Image (tube, rainbow, N blue to C red; front, side, top):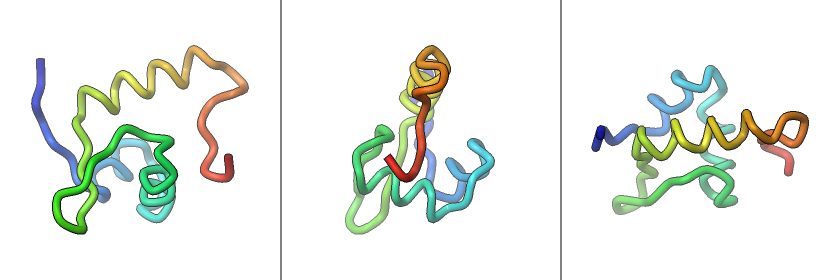
Length: 66
């Protein structure tokens, strides 16, 4: 089990989206995240699980506008 913690930039690179998209998803609680001070952080294992859940939802997958 990995306890790796990712930054907004690392998650954006991993998901191949803009950093602003990751920030919006985190602020809207649509992606598993937590704050350390004013900075968002993400557990990689939770991001991997979130991706699997989104993939299983098919067309109802994640969208920054939802």
